Length: 408
Image 1: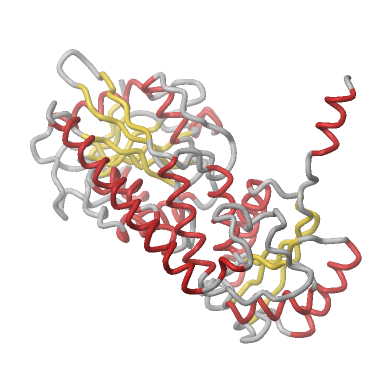
Image 2 (image 1 turned 135 degrees about the vertical axis):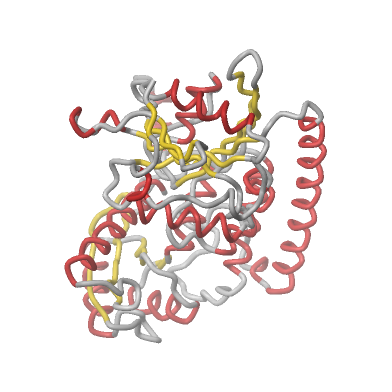
């Protein structure tokens, strides 16, 4: 290896060493004890994936229980002092809480722990900052970061250098002077104006596409369930699809040929996650608009995930927030190849009116994709595909098998 290459490798900054804290709060898991433990472990596992997706090195995970958050330190003084000792011994750069912290809690924890502290909202924003590539994506992430930062201006500790890089600090790129409330407010206003222009441009592009009167289908779902992989498989596109959370942020639209009589416009966009920050949903209004204006939502679900039913509920909660709850949905149960052959469902599930409600597929091995195309053709050709509440109803998972199931 040349000296230049060695120098380049040595110059690469080491990943931040992260300590993850997860607190089981009674209000967050109001279920039986055994179920509460399962849900908490699932949430903590997802938080670990979020930390890894940020590019950090996850050094340790600290689970704990509380009836309610401490108003000053969230975890209480005793536990916070234990964390401070662990931070010092393990040379931790950043402590991440898998919860939303108040500005006061965040500042108090930073004083006590003597390192940076990031909450769940800040962590998700940090991942979005790493993944945003288009101008629209960067504008939306910057707006969300500034809105989040506006309530956290007082950092004033010697160990927190605003010019230093790190998880949660990349994006807006402010100096200490730029954290002044007036300047941030002005910048937020400018960003919102720029995003309004983006939305107008999108509306123009959408109007041009709609002149062909093609039905609009939008892929939605929890993050890392295979939406982008399915999009690539159907459209032969090359959208980034990786086994990690929030691999895709930017919206992509392609024309999809289904048969000689039917073509649709298919869009792929950002995946959802539990407790997705409202500020982030608002900031990504331009991207999520493709979803809100679709004729049909293709709701992709990882059928192998132990909490896939909760993930469906989390996605539907975000859809409600962006006024897309009443758009007809086709549930796409993905990753059936990972199930035992004897337990592998197949075919199209229809409601009592004969309308496709769900389909079982595997993007990995291609099984079920013919059924998916058949279901999409039927939905595209149905005259009652419209944004009304009755058409948007989704049967519970346990009721799906009570209706007609077709296999090809």
